[in-house]
Image (cartoon, rainbow over all chains, first blue to last red; front, top):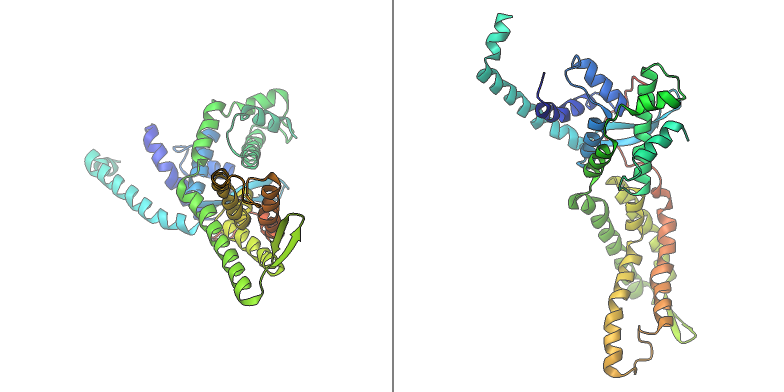
Length: 114
Length: 231
């Protein structure tokens, strides 16, 4: 089980990385994150929308209402240029964080023993 | 309005956002819950027991409301980008144009109206069509809401309104000092109403007309085309 704070910190990276591939609405983001992390990361309504609105306020994502094939209106989020810029240092930070953990926690030897 | 939408609206009734923003949040969360309902095997119309099961996806509604409010709280930088800079730019263009028209093209017309004077320039009113459009477009490009765009488009009127209101205490002071010797002092209600009408309401009309086209629609989006996989 991963600590809640780490999950919270990684949520930003998860959403921005996902939106780098194309625009998605909130439910779709939640589903994709869950599927692609094998359920390790999960978003519910209460954790997803405050994060999306914060990213929107920061100008990292932009949203617009679009009509889906079923005729329902969905608010779709798209990565902005500023968001793309922010993603680069964010990825670098997380990479160095994991590398540091790997050295400290001996994750490399665990990996080798597998 | 669906039962689910009504329930979400009721549970987020205390959401302290402007009405259009609140409606947007409610519609978005309802949409999300509808998709959860479909996932849970309920059909499109979510009723009775199904509604309560779907609503249980949010454990603490008041907490969600607070978190949304906090995440949408606008900082100074945001207001500067969406309101202040476009409004100052729009006001500057409008009053620069007014000066150019007054000194190079034609003097404003002065019409006596009972005991007051109406000073106007139709050329400037035409320019306000353009500045209204400019302000609304500028704010929209920065991601401004309908309200932000309206505030920016009406900047020339707001600047003049602020000036008139700022002059009021000065006029009152003058009036008191010279013992009601000033014939057109801003203290007389008719003069105040007339000035507000001519200097604030009249310029607001072409500004609004010019802005109308850009008041609707979402902010311009940058990035790749949409690639959606789910309904």
